[in-house]
Length: 400
Image 1: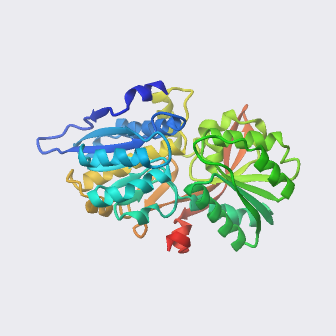
Image 2: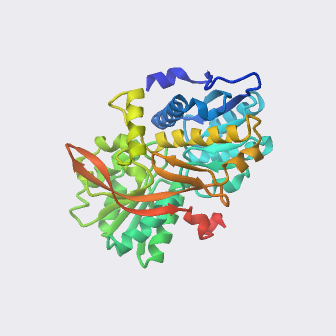
Image 3: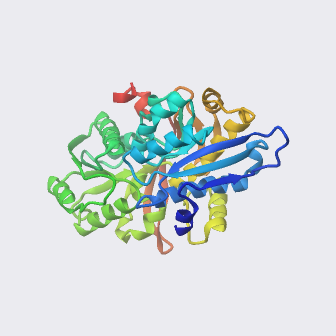
């Protein structure tokens, strides 16, 4: 972690990624990620994913030199990220913006990229309607509906959950995840007994009073969204300590709560949890196994990529395609055109940018946590193939 804190704040890293000729363009890419504070673990994952793609695929940039100009967004909230984006556009004159772990940061930045006509490639921020805020946004990660909506139907139809309580972190992605699960669950005939806001994203709250309230309500399933990382570990520990499984309450949610890099910090009782997500380092496909091997070779045998790491990798693949498609002459309109319908064989599986929504189309996999070979790991037990963002597909709420 320290190497990333030393690398940044405000550091400019120029990368000659290919042997460019005299006409090769120099492309400035502004990267806005949390490189310090409690969310630095997320910034590190995405940063490593980007750098691994660059190292492996120098020819993908068409002979053009790229310069990564990195800025620290520190936390959700939008103010720091917005100031960073303003500086990157007006002073650094970047050609492309990328990164953006937190939805509030991407939302706050959207008016600036529209005004400056600078394309944004989002590598995480999952609130469904973000691309509608600017014609120059494309997203390579996911929306909260990619997991929450199919999880709702799966809980009712496959897990036998007729009633559910929802717990969520009270900020845009949490509310979006709540709405996604509620829509899918109720459409399948389930009943949501209660939806409980459980603090904000900056500090991990004491989940005990919220979980005790859920235990008293006695639902069949407890669907929960919290930010990946320390929030997720605290969720599983509280669920275990209160004996909620023994009380007959199944813990389910999006894959944020079973993040690869935090899974081994959870109690063994995490085994049996069911989530829906688009990536795990445990996927046994040739592309992913090669990706994980390369990651460990680059960053250490004790490191593991997670869904943010693969988003950084795939996001840089998208950027490389946009650069070569425009032969280095980057415009916002040209980038959106280049990425419309773009497909890629990712470590997570096939991904495509939906030409209609500028959002990702990808498999949503049902994950089961199992304890095997002395560790907790992910097994895929079902798949919803090539899911378009359900929020936009069904024209729900702000996605209309």
